Image (tube, rainbow, N blue to C red; front, side, top):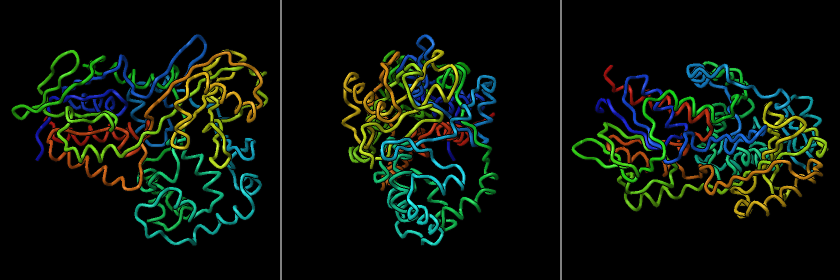
Length: 453
């Protein structure tokens, strides 16, 4: 039986670490949370500049699980919650240089120019396609086999770029989109599974979907969590985690701390090294197989009269087959009020990722030239930016590649060999903010099962 945990350290104040600390503190565990930056939140960062409010990382949080919704309520954030503009339900895909709305009803699906008649009829064959014999198929292989090439090119390819900043050929279906894999395995069809599995998903805690942010932006979430914690050590870069006499000690750039019964290391997988964990060279080599593609985010504000398109939606995604230099854009000021001054539009544009990593690395001026040209052609932009900012993520989002079981098995082996160490982060069990919240709550529950109250 695992040892009881009375005192615990968490390295990294990303959302998973914050949520875990918050829940463990409620269980009576003494928690020290260390963060190398000057503020909590990891990739979640909101910047206010006059009447402009921009997001450097995640822009929204999709509430669809009761567990996450109840957590937001417990934090006391319901009054600060901002629900996305109803227009945000409209999503656009670029085809032949024009923004086409994704169909949202059966009637619009029949009429949409996004797919040819043969492409639409091909989808109807999906329930009769047999299961794959490959237990670790790529997202691309799965979609092309079940739904056809057009659906891969003009739906799933841009969808994957929007979520993972990556290509469907690079990702494992079972790890990146486990729900789709489960539908095929359990029901033999995405269409039948979506219909038949609705009741089961509701029983598992699914609620009516709500796309939200907060009054002060997404970073209000991690800041609120941090404010409710007893001990958060900012500007502490952890140099080593060592076990002495059955307990753990943590050394940061500002001193030594401990002892602890348990340490959670909540850092990106590429930051793991022998100072933090007891791992072999081969294990570290295996972990480094996880790729984080580079991504640039351009935040641009324009006068409304300088844009022909109404920007009446969530934003648009660009399929790879369109041969453009941006992955897509969010209509940020349409999504939520208070993101831009009156009479202005705010756009969040994404460049690079696993599709064109070399473009993400360009400097701000080069990128601005590229983005302005693309926006001119796609949304009829004619004016100069009234606001501009650029954030570069050299390592953005972990790609759950085929063969990812090797990564998870290596992590498990390291944890078993280092009793009292847990590795946490968005390289396990999902990359989204809701996934990380659920992972943090579940991790706390697992650890607290051995706590004496």
